[in-house]
Structure formats: C-alpha cells, structure tokens
Amino acid sequence: MTDHIPPQPANSFRLVLELNSPEKRLDTVLLRAIKGQNDNLNLREITRTAYKELFNSGKILIKGQQARPSSSLAKGITYVDIIGFKK
Image 1 (cartoon, rainbow, N blue to C red):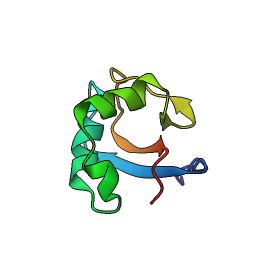
Image 2: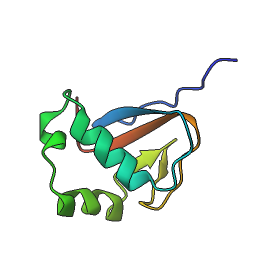
Image 3: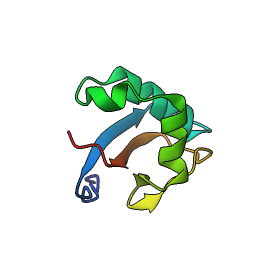
Image 4: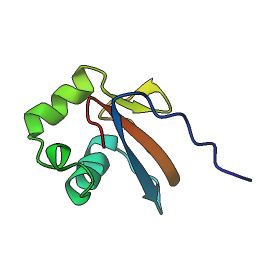
C-alpha cells in the first residue's frame, strides 16, 4: 500500500508529521515541528499570537481541509500545509 500524498496548495509551506503514536492536539505537535525545522526561518520564528491567527484565519490545512487547534492526529504520516509561507 502506498501513501496518498495530497497536492500542495500554491503559496504554502508543507510540514510532514510522522507520529509513532496518536496525539490529542494538533496545535502542540505542529508548533514543535515548526520550531524544529530549518527550511522556513520566517515560520520558525513565528509568535504564539501569529500562530493562533493562522488557525483562526483557516491557513493551516490537513488534506486540504481547514484544521483546528484541537484536531487529533492519528499514528503515521500527516501532511500539513500552511498557507502564506513558501519554502
């Protein structure tokens, strides 16, 4: 079985989250991944206020759907696209 990789939206930065166990909240896992990456330094230096605004304005997508901070994540690979931040 091969993983289905959703198309990446224009003008977005993609993070691939690979989880060994399910997580209850997307916001904490995603912020940790953002701070740990080196591909987009502007995004890495984002403030908590600006990070919350990305969720509020619908700029964080999972499988093309608007994500919520409280979204749970399944074990495995999840593709998260953040609109407005190019690689």
